Length: 210
Image 1: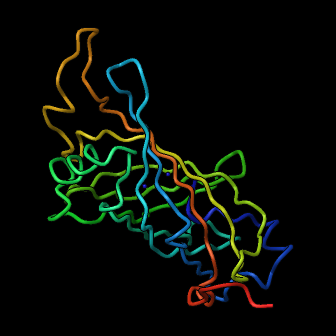
Image 2: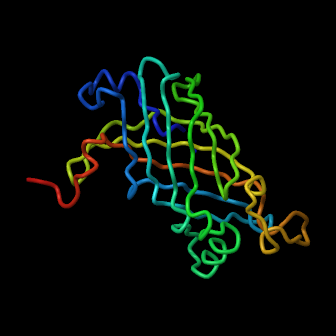
């Protein structure tokens, strides 16, 4: 599931110093964070969808990106392309969700990029296969309060992967088409839309307090 799960800017830290935990830890909001994907279908159109249930922890050191880290998981059972029958087949036949219910990402290196964002290198594991990917991360949104009074920051991250590298293959995906190419492209474009909140606020649920 991506512009860094922990791309919080130093300037933002200066504006809201109380927002950050002493250990620079943030939690991913699982009900508000998604991995959105798109692939070419029949060479002529784009198929899209998303996977949710994202959970994890982000460590962000505003002074030293080398100390940053990300660990996150996605719930493959939430795979949704908008067509129930197709989704059931993809989850069962291609993701083998009963055997591999989660997708995981664990960072190995974080560096600053020239545009003020971050580049997050890490290990992505799908169906028991682990490959290195690089997430191109935008700086975060300004902090806001949600309806429950939790402080939230939005993060966007993008990457591209080969589904075949992770064993997501099959006749309904890889069959040839008349115009050339295959039914579903090997390259998958991924955009992560993530909301982060302080760990101390993860237990806050229900309507906002007045």
